[in-house]
Length: 380
Ligand code: NAD
Ligand code: MG
Image (tube, rainbow, N blue to C red; front, side, top):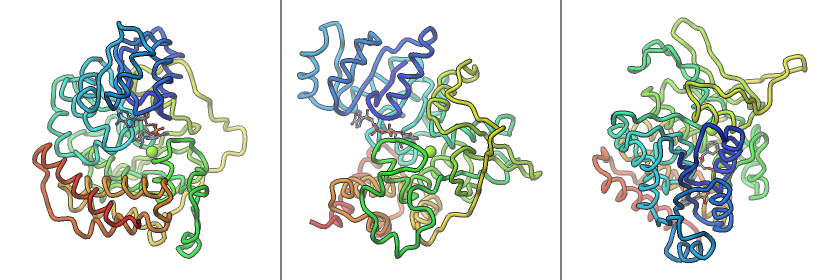
């Protein structure tokens, strides 16, 4: 197995799963964007053969920490090399930087356990091509998509004509129920307090704006070949029902569990085998209250932006994701107010020029343009 993004929230939870299932897997490669000491500790614990880092400087620093028998590779090319070197590849990198992992793992015919939704969303037409490689498959770690994957078992895979709707559940984030006026004053501290999940900073901010759910609509559409119009977002504050599939005959299948990412990670590593180890169990003898409500699409404009990007297709999702990355980064650096994140992304999307996204060069160009426009809108 290769675990790329090993030091993050998904990365460390994947290591928990590996410790619990140590007989089944051998971790051969890891990568991370910073925290070299942590990478070194992981490499020693699991005896990995190769480590990916971002820069030559990181490589030199890491070289002094690990033995000469450990290979060290650099940058996107290094990530691609590691992703082609194992049977199972976990993409736990955050943001567009995870693209080489997704494309390389699928191109090499591997199982891709995908947490990095940004790469799939931005490159959907290109991913669709490499996905046909013999042996290649995507198993979604994102909890909602992992739930949908399970609820779709038995459905006709070509376009899923028997599916009426996918109900993508959302916790609603820390600002659920607040009006646009109340939202205008929220702070970084408020945004970083997620009610049900502990995650990396980018996805935590995305959850507060509901951009995460918007991105997940695009992710579901790309993963399952179902138009965004058949993906419905429903707010479910308890995060117990991880998503639902409603069939044409009215039957609704759901997957329930405690909110713990180690379950979807285990599922993606083991499928079709289920590991005999539960990361917590639901107790139906206690009062288990499950609530559902429609999202407030006026106060949380990110959802409509995502549906519009889905309708536009081509490079529009890549623009949405790139502009959002810049806006979130600016917010985390105290350069942008929370209430300005989604309007900034909307302003970038207003300048989108239709592009069918035919090549990787085309994607990099679109990504760079969207980022440049977004940067230009961040107050100095
Ligand atoms: P995180 O910020 O905690 O971790 C990100 C990891 O990526 C770190 O190991 C970091 O070092 C690494 N990284 C960053 N840039 C890199 C680069 N250029 N090269 C190599 N490594 C790099 O993020 P996270 O919360 O673990 O999220 C990872 C991905 O999983 C995101 O796409 C997120 O949307 C998705 N996801 C996360 C959760 C969750 O519970 N955390 C749930 C669903 C989906
Ligand atoms: Mg999710």
